[in-house]
Image 1 (cartoon, rainbow, N blue to C red):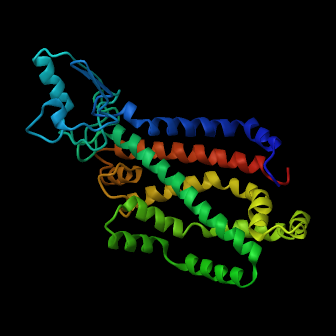
Image 2 (image 1 turned 90 degrees about the vertical axis):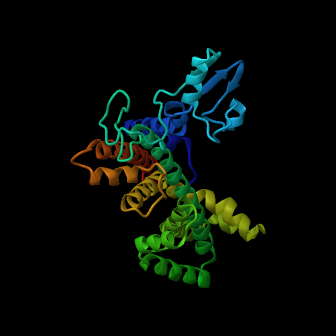
Image 3 (image 1 turned 180 degrees about the horizontal axis):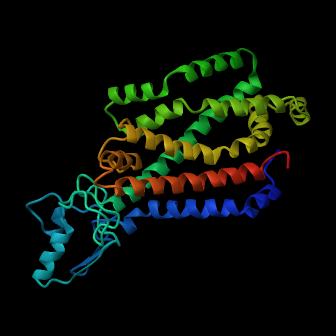
Length: 334
């Protein structure tokens, strides 16, 4: 059953689908354009007739005549230029902090200077949360893309070929499902000192494709004996053409309804791993890391727990509302 315009109309007629879409795209927009809203570097710097974009491009200290440092302190540079009456104008983000910048205001509550307060190292929670949401969404989308790519490919060939291929893959799935997921993540992150984002994502995907493969396998088993497949074989169509041209488009519709739930699962998994201390390497901004701080300092700094919880809840509810609407619109019984 291919996707039809009628199904999309049913999806967009539901109020919860619009609530979910609006909520998701608000979070997506602000997180993916985080440099515009929270940044310690100027968005635009006009200095002596030259235009710079420090928030997006890295400039060497020598370009500004700085010889005693390899890093550019733009606030100090602007202050010196104004003191020397140079023609300098700078435009900063609404929240003039980046997620890695440590300050002296440790564990400060929400204020005009730090909208959502600061954490145990004096870092701005607004910046940490905004960039952390981007990391979570990127992780969730990549998790969905990778797990669906592996799951759909394996499920297609498993269902179509059957026989020994089907038997061997089923046994591998069973072995995969009995392995302790969290223990493997901890072990791999402990042994590997490389980028933990890639390592963690790869390990989580390794354990998450089996359900998608099983769903698609069931679809392929019901489609491979249908009349259009038999007709394609009779016309001499090759195996790969039958799989990708005739079976896949008809088998994907039920799988697409799982997409939002897969994204939310990736986001929640990363938050749990970061909360337990087995996720991304510090000082990477992370919702789970803020939640962990919030648990540790719940008596003295409740904002560290409240705001990340609200952000995570907002994301998961929005995505799950989209998933529920897709499931209802694409229900074959309707």
